[in-house]
Image 1 (tube, rainbow, N blue to C red):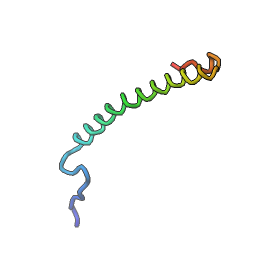
Image 2: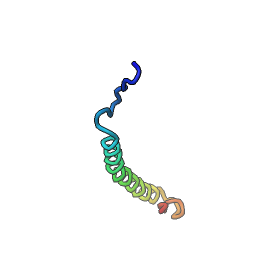
Image 3: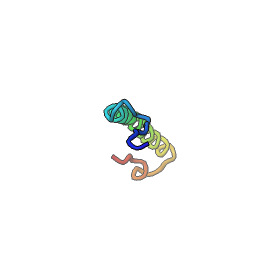
Image 4: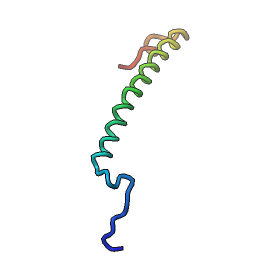
Length: 62
């Protein structure tokens, strides 16, 4: 058993493949998250205005 290498999920692919996967995941998640925030801001403005809330409560935080 001494000196044997324990297989890992990324065995044989090296660290580059794992890093590339993380970069791809981050790059694809960012637009998804930002679009979700934008939709929430717009809906908050619409709902707040319709409910008659004051401008200080309805204005988005930028």
